[in-house]
Length: 241
Image (tube, rainbow, N blue to C red; front, side, top):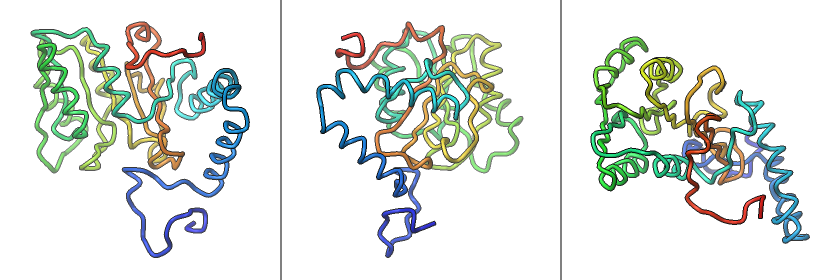
């Protein structure tokens, strides 16, 4: 297995949770795409890339259980969640419910925008060890109020390595009319993923961790009926340009 990677043989590399190492065949394919880009940069970036991106979205969608048209490629999960946070119509009195096991940069993002817009970002405290999924759900729902508009939780937590029962969370939130945003940065390559079955409103997953894709490979899934509400952080030419 080690021979498949370019890793320093004197180091035992375990931190795929930050950035996974690319296997040699993946790295070779990555370099081949770079050569295609450099062979005719304008043709590739202005015209050819969109067909390739559509093909990649469809293949990734088949792998994670959703339609390719509902996926967007993005550099990392932090950028994905920031895009969603900035798109939400939240204001004074609204509540976003999360946990105390979320990724630090995303906690900061929520707190920043909450202060700016006047909504409340609430972190439900879960002491370790956690017990059953049923206990988790019931405990978590004690913090749900009539003002809860959004639930934001990890699928696999970054710092504590917990697997949260996100399918059950999404199902119960749907019944209560609450939007769900799932941070699945650590899931692709670790757990089987079926987004259609889970049915979140928003899900993001990083492919450059345990799936060992090139760095900057992350997807953002947004349910079809919510896509018109999403405001890109950066407006540029795009395919229509």
